[in-house]
Length: 299
Image (cartoon, rainbow, N blue to C red):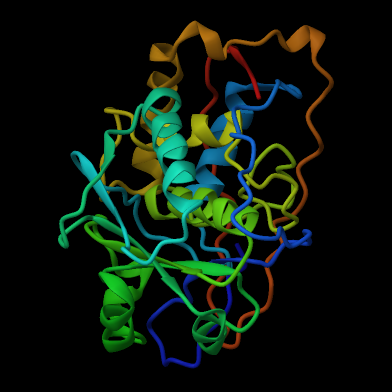
């Protein structure tokens, strides 16, 4: 998910994109084993979770600050294009089931053209003509490739200009392996729904440019669950969200609980690193979250 600058003029932000991963091309329509939540690697306390949530939610991959929290409000519909490769539909169904059960997001497939999220498949050369080094990408404010080409470079496709999320489109190469299609579905749908940043210090997450994980982890589901918590809403500023965060983990199921005393320490926080953009953007300063109760979560 590399933030790459397009040739379009400001103020539009570059789309959120996934970097190509190193994998072996699979011949034919090979069926991949269904991914599931990974076994806990370490425990995360509420202070760490709050810090990660704020940095993921209020800074773009380019380092540009976001003025407000945005998400979809109400039930979310998603349409898979008719030309989707055969492996995409079952992988998508498994992903949406996890989003409903693990992140608590009200999301379902539809065939209606007015779906909130559209997943479209294109020749790789078409995607590379827009974002040369990306495997796939997501943009807000449009439905489908034609809509994106018309709106490209305008405020409609600028994440920082949104007050809430109403539509988004995901573009994935049709001429690639099933594994890459699955990985793109996980990463780009997650960013269409929630965080737009990547942090190198998060080895337990897909929100990391090093691509340690290709499918959504327990940590990612916790971040998405927090994004859609009833205590939060679109339009809230960073201080408003930080003030509400302490109430969020208290409602979560005990199945997320871990024991900090038995887990290895979390990696030390490293400075946020981003890939250079063609046009400089104001860098966000530290985002502070209030101290939270001392619960721990297995991620």
